[in-house]
Image (cartoon, rainbow, N blue to C red):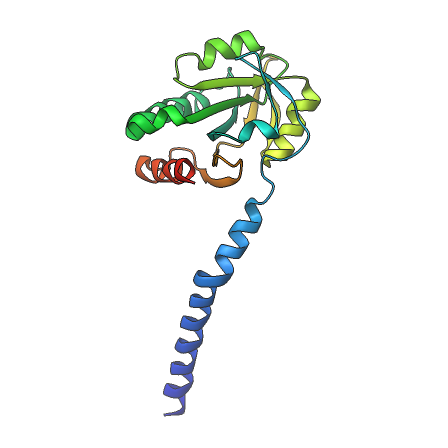
Length: 194
């Protein structure tokens, strides 16, 4: 009998803690984790002839992806996924700005980025001095690292998430690499409606 009472209390405690986490603590931690993403001191040259800064996130829902033009798989796949998201968004897609920030400023010039993202409607590329690109990476809390190849060339390891911001420039959510299209589009719709 005593065992049953202890087990019942244990179940009640687990349910209460789960409710507390889901209803109160998780949303608080999630919102705090996103505070300040995209904010900071960086200035990058864009394929539109403008400068991409933290202030650029305001005014239009924005999806930001860090990658590089020599990327063999993740970057072209993600850009292709973005086109699918645009198709799913329909008319709303025109209100979504896509910014592709290079993690390889030594090779990725503005002209090269223009060719690389030019086929994706609404996409702009951004690059700049190495220190400015690293400052942008820090502001967006993303990672990149040069990886030497056997032939003397190099590739880049980098964060593969797409970071989504609303019209106010506030971070909304992250879309994982190869995330299900319906959840990715739902995150973009949230940004577009807030």
